[in-house]
Image (cartoon, rainbow, N blue to C red):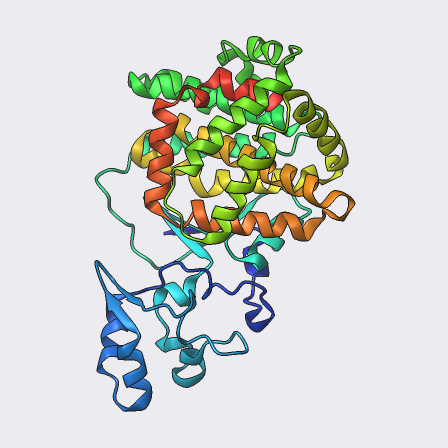
Length: 390
């Protein structure tokens, strides 16, 4: 089997007690795999008693949180299980976080997630174009009846061009996302009718050739440049935020953040003109930091795009990548308004951290978003393209 990891993958090391928001904190469920749980439940002595009293089970074993924290997190932010039993006796979730893994036939892809502040820092501050490193590992290929190997081959080719497109300094990130939406929409139409030839044609083309498959790209760009773009963006982002507002809340930080978004940026006192003027100033002030947004987009592409090889929802992945970008940008916009000149990299890291914990670490939340993408017309291609240029 081939294992692929982002080029920055090995730069990650847990910073333990130096972490401002430990992964053992935050109110989210800390699962324990079956083998580890059985070991903990069978342990004797005082520490074994503590383990048994701290484990609960619904569908899976997990730790019973104390004040929203793992009960084995000490006052210094260090893991007592690690200190007493050693790393080899920690559960899979604890040893792997913030790493995530996906299997695509004979390919295993592993990355580091944004919910960890150190991983987010590494990803956002990276200065290199996104690439991945490969090595052959001894794992056997994972078999899954839902995996579409021919489509995966085409998607790998398309994804490579997306990564290449993200390095193009002549295009703004918004224009790159518009092209991503356009080509994925065309690819989705071909997938829907099982038009293999059309899929191959797109997969074998460079990103500079994708425009010929985009039947409305010029129209989308032109439509978004009208005088009411500011008002359209404010209304459109409110509708997108409503979709994210419907998600199961995993952390109160997310609740506070979205409440502020609705009350400030989308409240009655913030007019369409004020929103438009402020957003123009915000974009100007953070222009030099577009690299961070590009890195985030590459992360979302690596983590989510290839999942279409299982569910055939290619356009849904483009919608997720674009909507995540728009919501994170709106969160940045709010913080910029609140902090003014004090707004900086730490603000962006905090917001990314809050966002990722809410959206990326709940399969139910991701599935709910997919439903919204299908049925809410704000996520249609023309609407998203207009918002990107608004």
